[in-house]
Amino acid sequence: MELDFEHCYRAVDSRDPRFDGCFYTAVRTTGIYCRPSCPAVTPKRENVTFYPSAAAAQRGGFRACRRCRPDAAPGSPEWDIRADTVGRAMRLIGDGVVDREGVPGLAGRLGYTERHLNRMLTTELGAGPLALARAQRAQTARILVETTDLGLAEIAFAAGFGSVRQFNDTMLEVYARSPSQMREKQPVGRGEAGVVNLRLAYRPPLHAESLLAFFAGRTLPGVDEVVDGAYRRGLNLPHGSATVSLRPGDRVVHATLRLDDVRDLAPAVARCRRLFDLDADPVAVDGLLGADPALAGAVAGEPGVRVPRAVDGFEMAVRAVVGQQVSVAGARTTLGRILKAAVVLVAVGEPTPIPQTDTTARLAGFPPADVIAALPDTAFGMPTARRATIRALAEAVAAGKLDLDPTADRTETVARLTELPGIGPWTAGYVAMRAIGDPDVFLPTDLAARRGAEALGLPATAKTLSSYAERWRPWRSYALIRLWRAA
Image 1 (cartoon, rainbow, N blue to C red):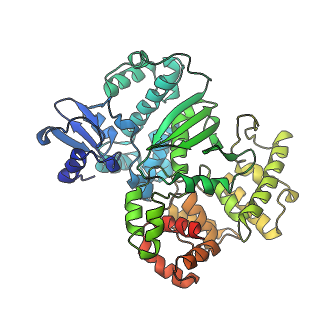
Image 2: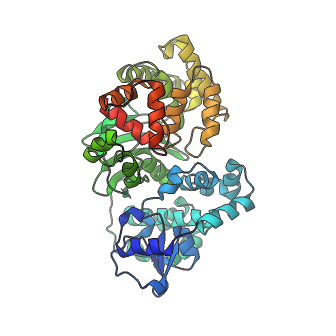
Image 3: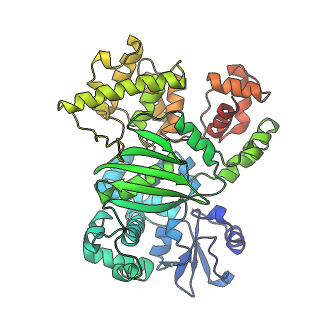
């Protein structure tokens, strides 16, 4: 990836936090790399090199700054937007695929050879998939060292390292301190086993009220809830289940993760960031939408509105199908009935277990596709055609014919969704926006969107509204959220 030296240096000189995660500043005289907003004295031009990723800086022989902690910066918004192979690869690496399946597994998911994938990533990011995954492992290990009482050997394997020696060498190289030195100043007795507290950075502004209000209106018993200004929900992760609590704060979201298996820390963090759309660039989004006089007042009054996303693509697709042509409250009632039937089905030993809900603390993830596919007709409480749609959707996901993760090919996924009976452009678009993370979805036939458009003095028919929305590219998903709020 080509980085313009002058633009980068000006961002560093002004300590602009908007560029944190977009590039990294390496200082040859100190041997460290920082985020652009690092409060240290601005280095001289002749001593600076800019890198597109932390992994590239580490590969160049630089260690992370202890003051600004560049590994904790928000992710680049570029990988949040892009739907190409490199963008998908970055999302898969963030979800821990390389740690679980290796580079062959990553390449196989993307449909490329390992060699070609390595070439593409190195060209754009200055590092291949192994180096990118290694940088993520180091960050995961640092969090576990500093926030848990796990033994260092346990942390090594939980973070994805192949050996304790590899763990020690990497931490020393990246942070210039051994794991034991990093723990020396940390308090002991940090509390409950499997609980990790951390702060998820974002680019301000963040309109937290809109996120929490959106989720609060759609919570499901035993799956998610909004309590005292925090959103809590259950997660299904590669090695077990988890409950997460997310409370928005100033420049960070405070996260408490209760993990069955600490190896799931990296994918849990990736899904939490995705859920609250924390890697977005709100300045870019609001700059374009705010230039439209119809949206200018809403943008000025509520800066930083994000797209509420999802941690489970299948769950979001089921929610979308159930929500067709019914109210939000009606959809919640129907989904609650399906959840109760799924718990009963699991209780008698068929077919795949789901995490059981502890009403005092733990929440369960949404039932997996094979459980929903196995439910009897009486569990759905909806018209026959819609019930058939959910069953066809569940069977396609369970059989691996349909990928609804954010790492999926967006165009291909929408095409496969619309091939299923009962799924049209509205449902496929809604899933693409919330589950797959497409920032440029618009639903002109949506009743709430049309009502919101009318309230703002915009064209209210589907055809004219769709034509008008072209000026909001590539951020039409964010415009849609604002129309819904206007409604």
